[in-house]
Amino acid sequence: MPDFALRKTMTFIEDIVHDGGPIPSDQRRRAAVAALVANPFAGTYAEDLQSAMDDLKPLGLMMTDALIKAMGGINGIDGYGKAAMCGERGELEHTALWHVPGGYAMRQRLGEAKAIVPSAMKQGGPGSTLDVPLGHINAAYVRSHFDAMEVSLPDGPRADELLLVLAMSRGGRIHARMGGLSVTEVKGEDGLR
Image (cartoon, rainbow, N blue to C red; front, side, top):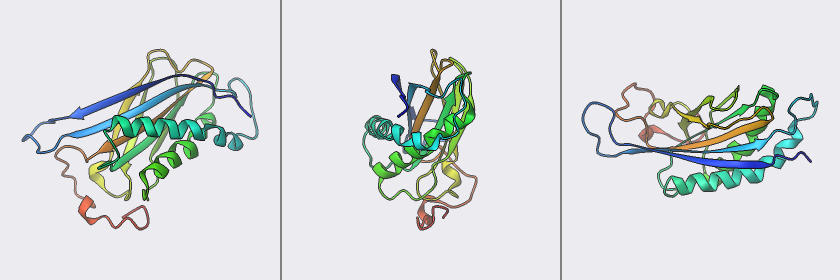
């Protein structure tokens, strides 16, 4: 059983009140929770990584619960995304360990979320930025919810760490006007429309 020892977490909250043009009637909230954990595979090559995803599931649920709290509750959350970064002794495949524990934790807590959870992965060191992609929770074709939230921790990931991030949003971009499927047209049947 790999040891993904947790070093720290950090929560980011953005309340977007205005973004040019007329003042909107509703503000938008984006939030992210980041965790720095030990990468037990750093500096080595392991053929079997997939089984280690189960070891990260409790962390995914804990981070999701913290994120829902940061969002002010589950009501109205309609966007989500995830991302991971490995330190210099890791490899991109180590960041892929976050796909199932991060994505399924959010889908489980949000209930009927149908769309795939957008994801980004990269390698970097302390202070590197990570753009966490966001998309609508039930329909990937809702353009108003295509977005990203930038996350950075000044002290991680260290060479032998993973930076794991979950993000959620309430509402689309302020003044979204690029067409595509609207929120009112979402059927939520196949995760696309």
